[in-house]
Length: 161
Image (spheres, rainbow, N blue to C red):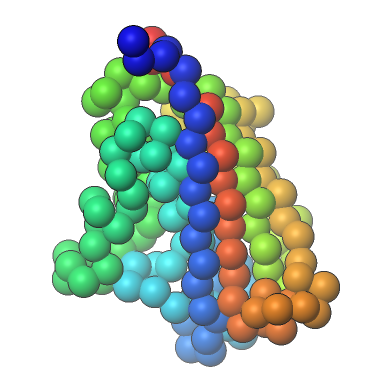
């Protein structure tokens, strides 16, 4: 018997480079470096897509939105999240809550988290209280701490209505 509740976990990592916009949680963050990727490289939304898809046993973001497919070149990751959630709902599931963490040395994300939560809650059709976003730094260690990359983790709980 398939249980009525499931958890999912997602992770995403992108290199930071100059000349790219930094978009996290659907929010343009002022920065001299942005994430490198085939799409807009929104590391937070990508980790949420993977968590949702995984929870519903729908594989991963790369399976549905290949980084070699020209139709996804530069795509707004809010559209990828919307489509990922549509697939989850198609299987009869709804989001209960999301917990996520973004690892980025700079800039500080705290001022932008309320808008990120609003964006994600709207796409996932839940109250903002169901969306948790935390931010932390690499403390000058590793690729995050050295400002070379950005990483995000997401955990979701879904239930079959």
